[in-house]
Length: 179
Image (cartoon, one colour):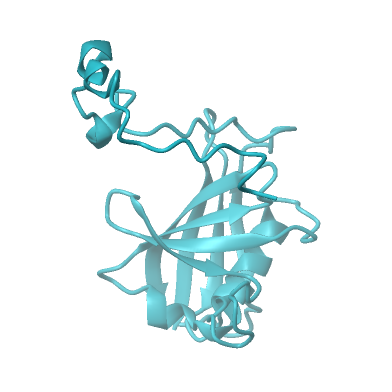
């Protein structure tokens, strides 16, 4: 079977590519098809991220093994497309070049029979020109105006008065005890 993807650049303008690739090809093969379709040189690090139906990022699948124990972490080459994506799980996020953070929303649009004589992967359709720079990502915590988050202890300056005049603590000093 052939997986047909729409790969959309996360940008203000509509920039996308439609790519056909065999279901038994790996995420690494899809990575190669994406960077070729968008005109990248393929010299940068990339990762796929599983996600839910609303594009919330979940698990990372890197191009290279970056784990502490060599060979323990699975990479793109270890995942056939059919093991990650199917009719129920159609979305995955792709990030190319972690300096510029080119981010793509990759959605499985169709699963079809292989066309006789077709060579896969294949870029089926191209829309929009790549911008010179990736859009700037703004990573913000969901804390709003609460700078302390869940760690607020409700203490103020008056609460610290309880420590004044308490001589039960020894002053260990620095110079004489830490040489």
